[in-house]
Length: 299
Image (cartoon, rainbow, N blue to C red; front, top):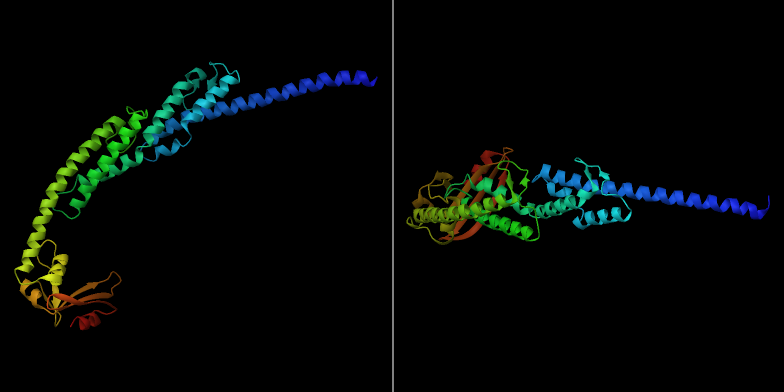
């Protein structure tokens, strides 16, 4: 066989082989894109299932990527009747709807950090009473987190977030729109509670102040007595000789005021406040292994 005839046989074979490889590569690319598209839908389901329990972590991929994948599949000639496999498989012609849902849910997820803070705070505030320890702080925080929640939901809604889907969470389970109403109510109730609690705090502080001020305490001494007895109900100190008393008159005159605590490990801690008049001159803390040694230092 001549060399010319040999080339004539080889060229068609190479052409056919190259075309087959191109077809294989195109099919492989198509399958990769279909899988990626199905992944967007699966992640939307994951978001809806987990909700406030870190559901937003499913929606890390940019929403624009979903529409890019659809465009690439169309460019490859994939028909609209092509099946896309996911938790609820769909035809390619439905892909734009799936991408729009992913985008709307992803935007809603941007508000999740603020929603979580507000709902967590609401669980604390609902059990608080005016004047109780921490009520003023938590109710003030309720106003702050409630406003942040409303602002976050308004912002994502303006960008196209889906506000009518139920957000999986502990009860109550609410939509984005209902969550905004929930946060608005948190602002109102927290603001009212904060006002009542501040009034109660002021009354309690006045009671404590008057208890010791009327007995003659002032300056640093008065501040320390009120610090340890913020409710003004009385608080036991040890005066020289390690004598226990909560008598305001005795506490207003004592040169040294001492506190003793037993630590969880059985050791003892002693704090001694020494006053020159009503001004604090010394503040000493010591640790002791034995109770007897702590009392010796107290005396």
